[in-house]
Every structure is written in C-alpha cells, then in structure tokens.
Length: 368
Ligand SMILES: [Zn+2]
Image (cartoon, rainbow, N blue to C red; front, side, top):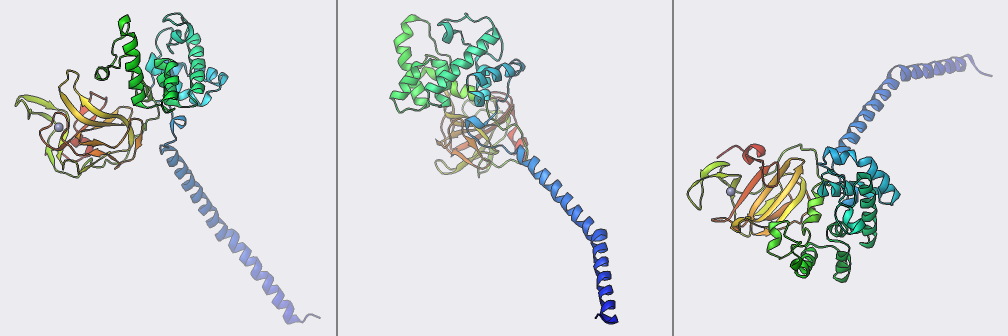
C-alpha cells in the first residue's frame, strides 16, 4: 500500500520531470538549435573557402586557363570527342593544346592536318579538326604510356619522338627534346623547310619543331587564378635600386629600370617566391641579340596577368611547371648576366617580357 506521503512524493517527482521537460523545450532546445545553425554556417564557410584553395593535383587534376573565347566555344565538342576516345580527363590539356596551336582561330584549330594526311591544309572543318586532333592525342598518349609531357611534345615533333624517348630513359625531359630537335634538324636542314621558331633554340642548333612546346602549352593550364593575401619579401637584403628611369650602371645613359634591386651575398642568400604560383621560366637568359641578359632567371606565374621575376641568381632551384608556395626557395643570390655585383633584380609584370609594374608598390614596401 502506498502511503499518502509516497503519493505526494510521486506527484512532486512527476511535476519536477514536467518542469525539466518544459525548461528543455523553452531554453535548452533553442540554444542547441542555434548552436547547430552556427556550426552549419561555419562548416559551409570553411567548405567554400576550401574550394578556393588551389590543389596541386598533378597534370590531370588541373584546369585550362587563359583561354580565348574561340577555344572556350569549342569546349563542348572537345568534351564530346574526348569522351568518345577515352581521354575525358584530359579535356583541359587538349584545350590548352588548342590554345597554343591556334588560339581557336581558323578551320583547323587543332592543327591536325599533318597527322591526318601528312600535309598542312587538308582539314577545312573545325569539327573534323577537333575529332582528328583528339583522336591523335589519345593515340599518342597511349603510345607515350600516359606521359602527358611526352604526348604534348610528340604532338609538335611527331610520333618519332616517342621511340626516341623510349630508347633513352622512357620519360620526357627538356634535354631529350633538345637532342631530338637538333638531330632531326641536322638530318633535314638541307630541305630549307626548317628554321628556329625561338631564338633560344639557336644555341643548341635545335630548330626542328619547338623545343619549348610543352612549356608553351602548359602556360594555359592549371595556374592559380585568385590573387589574395600578402606578399613575402623575395630576399633578406637591403633595397639598393628603385624602379623607373635611372642612369644605367654599365653605360651611364638614362635607362628604364624594369624592377627593383636588393643587395645579397653571392652563392649564399636564398631567393624566395613572393607569392604562391607556378614556375613558367627557369634557365639562363641571354638577350635576343646575344648580349648578357637576366642571367639565371626564374619567373613565377601567380594569376592570369601577374608574374614575378627573380634575376641574376647564381643557381636555380626550381623547374618549369612546378608549383611553388609562398616563401619557397627558387634560387640563390648571384651576379650572372648583365650585373655589376651580387644582387637580386626583382620584377612584377603582366606578361613574361612586358607589362612591368613597380614591385615596391606591389610588395607594399615603398620606394628607396
Ligand atoms: Zn635591377
């Protein structure tokens, strides 16, 4: 038998439970809902921010960039044939290739006539050009065992380059491209049909095709498009020369100084990428007329129209096509090329060789 006391106790217990439930409904539940909402919003913000971070996913993971309207208009047709020939993950590479070949202009935007019929001009319909170009790309890619750089260079040199590479190590290198070009040029120069497309190729006598074709295509692929955040200093050193008109240290004449200079220690001071990007140039530079130029030069592409250059270095630490982080070492201080002593000549510009801007303004360090 329950006593009256126990009944009262039971009623009180139920009442307390009811109150607790009401408190939960009225106060705690809304707080939980608000927390969930805040976490949800935070998660979305992080996810969106994350999607802007460039991933270094290798050649297959990138995207074609800086394409002309004409090339962009061909994307659906390229996608269609890329799917048909089993190279759908290479659509970006193929669009970059088309950009380099023609910029999307003309009746043969993939410049596929030679691989179809052995001579230029047999293709007169853009769709036929794309179909054959994509098919040819897929065949070369297969023969190149998936080596995209070898595939691209063979698109320019012809299939003979694949056999040459397979006999000499099995994967694309710039040296093999130069050796092959100079060998073919030696063989064919008597025909008078070949001349150097680039002044840099003359020194190697490599005037068959374009020895820098891979880099030329990859300029249209996988660059970081968003410029944001701050810039790192390219070197630990004192600024020694401003951007702008100055009297040339060699001739004494008034001349345009297209960058800013920093003092540094020869063979010692590291030079850093000032912003994340992709290496678009890394070699010894000589002016077109043969006079000393930038010496050991690295150029980093950060955005569609934003390049930084690091000149006169004693050594180079990066290769073309590589992506670099902000603050990554690209070379070592030097005095190579047209230089009167160890220093870093640093440029910011919109094109590889033009569109110079005052780097002091870009870096936010002010003039001397
Ligand atoms: Zn300078």
